[in-house]
Each structure stands twice: as structure tokens, then as C-alpha cells.
Length: 168
Figure 1 (cartoon, one colour):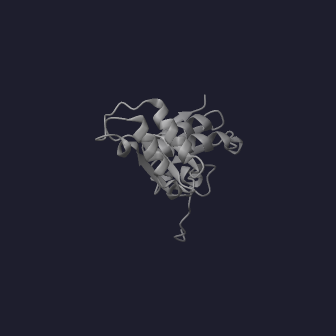
Figure 2: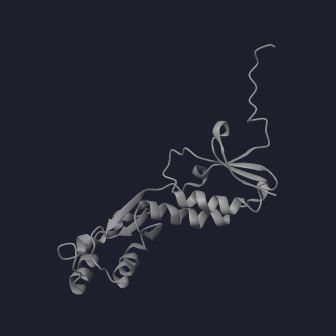
Figure 3: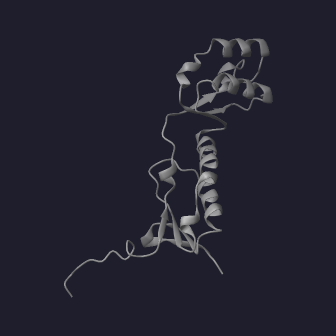
């Protein structure tokens, strides 16, 4: 034995599916519409429209924006849609909810466009331990998209993968 270390993972047929590879670059922002409600709870249409008209929307230029209300206010659907109408000329994408909801919507747009045929008949590991905020919804969608192609699907790292699926 000559003490050579052999990387069995690198030499295996195992394919790694890393969601971070598809993480869209760009700034993220949250926009809380409660700031335009009377005491954070009451929407007065005239005032609300005036706030929107006078708001500096350019600060969201080329950003991904999550729109939400941090209070328990009952906000009519048209109000959030109107905020989106103002944001759309500036933002790359607008999603309803918090940042995790935004990230999920980004992956929901990206993952269906990928070609999964390269994973046909191969064991695949969906890489865990991401440095970027990859939402749980992205992992669920990735597993769904890979399942028709992969021979098996695991989650985690090659040294400690959890089996999820094996084709019969």
C-alpha cells in the first residue's frame, strides 16, 4: 500500500445537483405595506394611493422584491396588486410574502426550465448545506423534477447522504 488517497466520490457515477448553482444573483428587498396604513392597520384608499404616488420606487431598481404586511391588517387584494404595479417597472421580480417566499418563487421560475436528461439513470444527490438562502420549497421542487430521470435520489453530502428515492 503506497498511502495514496483515492476519492471514491469523484470516481463514482454520483451526480450532484446543487441548488446554489441556480441561485439568481441580485439584491433582495422586502417591502412592508403596513407603513402606508393608518396606525399600520387601516387602509384609507386616498391616502394609500398618495403614499404610493410619492414613494421613491427607483430604490428597487433591478432588485427582487417581496411585498408583505407585517401587521394583522386586513388588506384588500387590490392594494397589494397596486403596489406591484408601481414596483414592476423597476424590480426584476415581485413576489407576495417574505424573503423565503420570494426565493421560492425564483426557484419555481428557474427549475422547470432546466434539462434534467443528464441525470437519466444516474444516482443523484441533492446537495444540502448551502451558503445561500435556498428555501425548502426549492428542494421539494428539485426532487420532483429529478425523480422521473434519476435512478436514485439522496440528500446531503456524499459522505453522509440520506436516501430519498430509488427507482424500482
